[in-house]
Image (cartoon, rainbow, N blue to C red; front, side):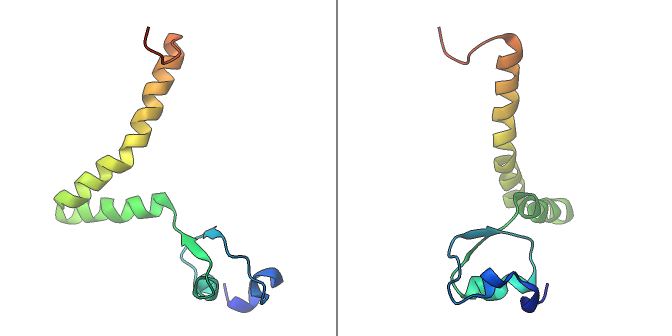
Length: 91
C-alpha cells in the first residue's frame, strides 16, 4: 500500500502513537519511523520457525515451536475440564 493511500488520520502530523498489528507492508513503514509500534502476526512468526526446523532441523526452532504450542495446550486442558464439568479448582 503506497503511503499516499493510508487513511488521512495516519498521515496527519498528529499521528496516533499506539501499536499497530499489520502485515509486512511497505506502506506502514513511515508510521513505524514516526513512532508507531509494529506488532507482527504470531502465525507468520511461527511459520518462520517452522520453516527453519523443517528445512534445517534446527534445535532452537524446535524449542520455539514447543513454546508456541504451550498456550494451545492450556486451552486444550481448559476445554477438557469444562467438558468434565470441573471448575479447574483443586478440592
